[in-house]
Image (cartoon, rainbow, N blue to C red; front, side, top):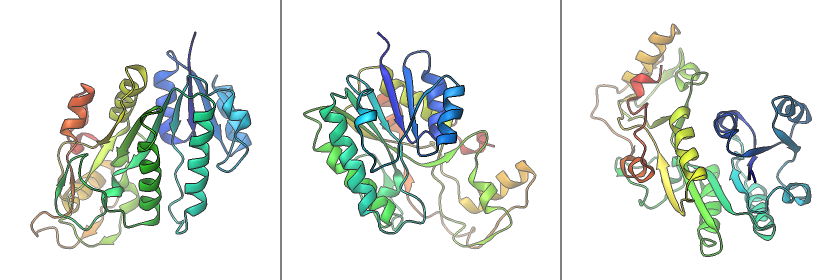
Amino acid sequence: MTLNLVITGYGWLAGYVGEALNDDFNIVGTSRSRDKCHALQAQGIEALEYALGDNTKPLERYLPNATLLLNVPPGRRSTNLDAFTKHMLSLIDSAIRAGVGHIVFISTTSVYGDNTDETLTAQAPTNPQTASAKAHVAIEQYLLSLREQINVSIVRLAGLVGPDRHPARSLSGRQLEAGNKRINLVHVFDIVKALGEIIRCTPLNDTIHLCSLSHPKRGLYYVEAAKAMGIEPPDFTGTDAEPGGKVIDARECWAQLGITPEFADPYRMF
């Protein structure tokens, strides 16, 4: 019997994941948009119109023995995320009552904060500073408290890059500071490999983070990326200063999954 892979928040990342795993699972995707649900159905994906806070009963029928991929972003501009966190925890409770087999939570390396120049492994303590990061930590901690009941995989992602997405585009032409800060990026193709391993194989009951293996200064990297893309480069101050900012060290995590990232070098991402 083909098991369900239920992806809440079927957006940019989910599109790549669903395409990669479509042969192994029955993909069920949720979206707040009815039009998006129709588009997913046209792609052969079982789609459900659902927003956080909605009645979970229609979703629960897909969840027994399923893998639930929680991929709902809280919104970049939100500052009060109490409702978001409450609804996420309620969805988790509903999934467990429905007999879900494995929960994979897409989190973020922003849970470590930005006020550090340290190299951080997945075991480093969190220090969330934004409302979004604090919400992610609260959800992580709740999931970790459930690990004796259910397999839980927490996957913290660095800045996302893909064939159709690169941060250099949003930085084009801007005047920016702290060019000496080091970058932490991860390519969607490497994320998909990791999630495939986590979901297909024995569930990873652990917390990991995913990032490239080198961390150039952003004042150098984004200028080179913009030039390669044929767009106006940003202009950074402070690029000549000693490298600063956090470094997400994901070497142990990639090794744990048995994966050598294809885009270990960010200069291969453009």
